Length: 458
Ligand code: G2I
Image 1 (cartoon, rainbow, N blue to C red):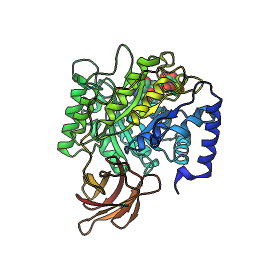
Image 2 (cartoon, rainbow, N blue to C red):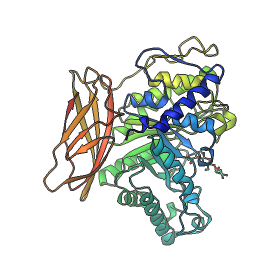
Image 3 (spheres, helix red, strand yellow):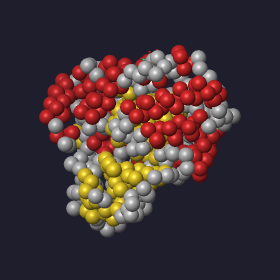
């Protein structure tokens, strides 16, 4: 079923629209006929998601869930999937709050970013007191149990979070996990892959948003993992910015160099302290950096309203504490739409907050129709294929991608597509692709994956 057409979704949209009309100074017009009017829809036009961190206990707040349902196409449980929340007592798992968030994501057709399987922080007391083999085994069991519980439901997992030290050393962060041996990170990734082969597996960190000693160290690790076949599919850049740690000027270049290693890159915890035009400009710049990197496939902001933020006093988010759209929202939406959304509130500056992009993605393919490119994660006996469908010089209304598998290989399941054998067609929400824009689907299989695909447009 297309979740966007469910009766529940329509009800939510109607309720949200009423709420918005009542909110003074928060009405925006869209400048061109086909510019999408929500963050999620605008990001989807280029095959990306736009997500937010979500707290389970806030889902009953109508303003909060109204914005969530209307704007976002991915959710990250802010605390509910962490080790202390999911395994408070060793061997006893508690998934209630995280399950609530996953159910809500499903109801609105949003992806889920799992956060975080292995991290030095927010460990339950019992794990903090373990070391050596006992801790290593507990970590492996934790990754296995949690990734298995959510198997098939997670788009991307932050498998390991914040494992590198700040400053110029380029060293690993000292922690009880690190002291179990330098290979703890790759063990966590291999364990997660075995438990949920369909999820993209990410390394996630902060202060790695520009090129510096810390991001160089992460880069070297990803390069090494790729060379040795350790399963890693994505790198998350948390992107918590403020005046002491502003959006780096080489943000896009840094995202691009990681993408060039053959991983997706994702902005995973974006928030930018500030207000007004300055904040709006920074949000636009962050969005444009992602759009300019083909493999930057999604952006997540770390909360909905300013009052929901871990840094609430810095008012770092896109909605004010009453749930009204801020100038930063308009700038982010405008950037997602390529600069076509015009704010019409009197409180919003009349000068454009978004200069045209300073750099661009590779030029769209010429000719009409579509092309399909595959990125493959292959391991012994299985694979996950991610297929990017790109429209040619004209908008397409639907697509079918065909792949050829070596004999003995088979497709076991797929997502974001309707599968019939080795032929995959769009589903209701991703058939329309603008000229030069892309959308992604994927499938998982046994044996050896395909390396080429053909695309037919409708
Ligand atoms: O610190 C910002 C983020 C940095 N990257 C990893 C993220 O996981 C992290 O998120 C924050 C949450 O936004 C906070 O909500 O992680 C904090 C803990 O490291 C979270 O704060 C905790 C409080 O420290 C606890 O006292 C509280 O019980 O939130 C818990 C649940 O509300």
